[in-house]
Image (cartoon, rainbow, N blue to C red; front, side):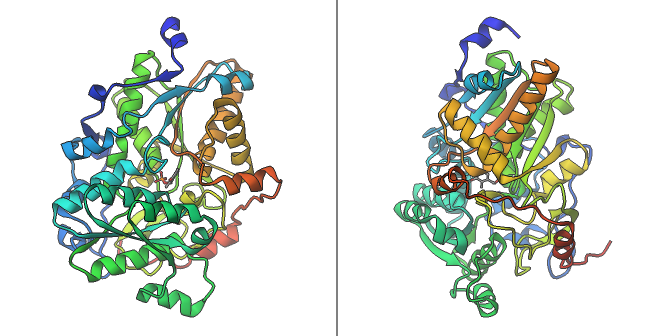
Length: 459
Ligand SMILES: *Cc1c(COP(=O)(O)O)cnc(C)c1O
């Protein structure tokens, strides 16, 4: 790389004219396609009609497309322009503190209206639903990032947005509720008494803290019952990962401006969408032999679906209403400990990302939350951005890698996605700073127990 180009750059920007005009679909570039999604009743592969009660046909087509590129509609590009292209930063102050010869770059998605990468998919999902004549969207949210993003996107296209938020987060994080309502959305704590699925959980445990799996069951139930209502999912599915590839496409173009090529790419994984969005365009380059980065997913030790889960068919929700997806899972009725990274508390992992992991194209590690918050505080004190609890996992892995480089003297280029800011997660930082935070690791017995409920499917 040219030293001059690199020395000039701390914040690497693209112009609006350089914004990607298409999303990248990795499926045709993989050595084998991911296994089919199965109908929960017949356990046969689902067809488009099976998904039609929940999603508009344009998104169903994107879910199964084998085209390498999908054009981004002009209406979506118009909204993306409110915050895209997002900046790529070189973390010079963090590098200096660590005394590492490595160069650390982070793609910052906290500049979006919701403060995370989630609007990258919320906007096209709202657009395609509005274009199909849908009036209302239902969804679940954990920490509240996805609910906020979908409420914002729904307002852009004149849709109503109804959100079920995991009870524990609803009580702990009142500001997300206010943000969702400010964008015009409606929000209920989950489990709620508005759905069959919610009432069943409440009957068994009136004080249930809820889970993403339960909230999904509630939102899906309402969408299935109303013809003018569809459901929107903020992670996990192929079309969500597809939309998020704007992150990686922009980062590729930004790194090219400073003549840098990543040796290591790290990202946090909840359902896998920000990680895949960053990594897949680079994986395309790797599969084509143009670069050779190590690509590493980072998950919490409290919810380690890649490093401790099994690769098996499972439901996406707790009540067992969704299609069966082959994915890394801890079991659909697994309720993780209440770690502060609410976005990483999902029992499964994107089927497409799970498949890529099975193919050996990426690695995975798990981190405890105190190590992650430690990294988050170090990052805030050097780079000036307080990260959301989720990407502190990626930052902890960046710091470990940079410190390894210090030992070996290797000047590696490390790339990560800082997928959201933590301005609405400050109570978690308060806990950490007060020395009040505990680590949760999942014992092998707990993993085995969680796995007992996996559904059986014909071979
Ligand atoms: C939702 C969320 C995540 C987890 O979702 P992925 O699909 O794995 O990206 C991570 N970070 C932030 C900031 C989130 O809002």
